[in-house]
Length: 116
Image (cartoon, rainbow, N blue to C red; front, side, top):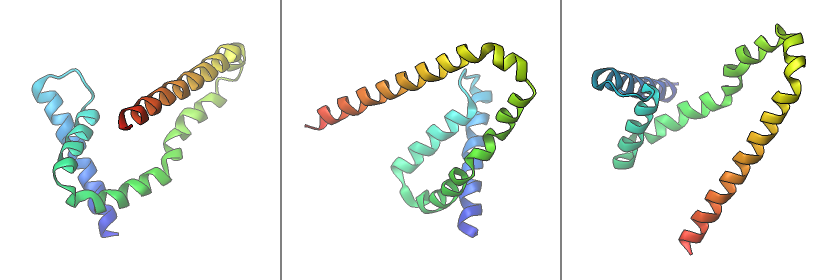
């Protein structure tokens, strides 16, 4: 339980650092992204935080579906509007899935080729 709380605290601190840096430096990127970049840099230099972060991140990933509940619940209130746009929605979902898989396959192929 202590590792979980410490890991969550570390994540929140880096998010706060990112948000603070974005405001202070007037950057045009999300603060959470900058916080995660800072965390990546710290973990690259020193991996001592890793055990605590593994515990917290595994718990967050386990319940990530709960973060999408509000989005999917809103779909129930848009019944006729969603049915009118269903072909466009399906086309975008299918196309974006195919493109994402194609792009990741290209990246994996390029990385494997770079290792050889």
